Length: 287
Image (cartoon, rainbow, N blue to C red; front, top):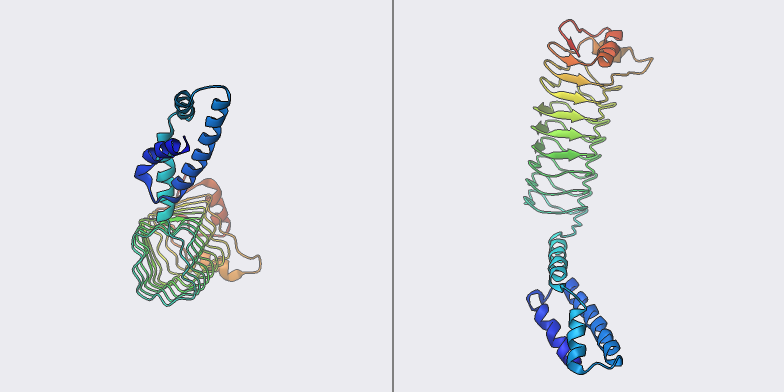
C-alpha cells in the first residue's frame, strides 16, 4: 500500500518536479499519510477503505502545492549578490532584483542600475560616478561615504535612503520623491533637483549653496547648519521646515538673508522662524 500512496502523491506533484520546497512538502506528506493509513487499518478497515479514507483526510492539497511552488520560485529569482571590493565599471544591472545586495568598496563608475530593485543594498565607500539609478528602488539603501558625482536619479524610489557624507556634485534628481532620506554632511555643489518632493529629508551640515529648489515641496525638512548661500526657493512650498544654525555662527544667519523665497508658500511656524533670522519674506504666502 505504501507504493500506492507514493504513486498517488507522484501524480499530485508531477507538475512541480525540481522545486525544492515542494519536494520537501511531498516527503513530509507521504510520511503523514503512511501514519494515517496505519491508524485506520488498526481500526479494522480493509485496504481499499483505509486508502480512500487516508487520501480524503488531506483535503484539497493542490492549492497548497501551488502556493508553495509559487513562493519557492519567487525566492529562487531573488539572487543574493555580494560584489564587494569588485571592479564593476560600466556594468549592466538594469532591471535586476538584488535585495540586500553588497556593492561596498567597489568600482561601479558608469554602471547602469535602471529600474533595478536594490532594496536594502549597500554601496558604502564605492566609486559610483556617472551611474544611472533611473526608476530604481533604493529603499533603505546605504549610499554613504562614496562618490556619486554626476549620477542620475530620475523617478527613483528614495525611502530611508542614506547618502550621508557622500559626494553628489553634479548628480541629478528628477521627478523623485525623497522620503526620510539622509543627506547630512553631503557635497551638493551643482547638484540638480527638479520637480521633487522632499518629505522628512535631512540636509543638516550639507552645502546647498547656489542650488535651485524652485517650485518644489518640502515637508518636515531640516536645513540646520547647512550652507545656504544664494539658495533659491522661488515658488516652493515649505511646511514644518527647520532652519537652525549654531548660536555662534554669524555665517549661517548671513546666508539666510541671501536666500530667495520669492513667491514661496509656507506655514506660520516656518515663516516665524525665518522672520526671526531676518530672511527676505516680502513676497511669501503664509498658510
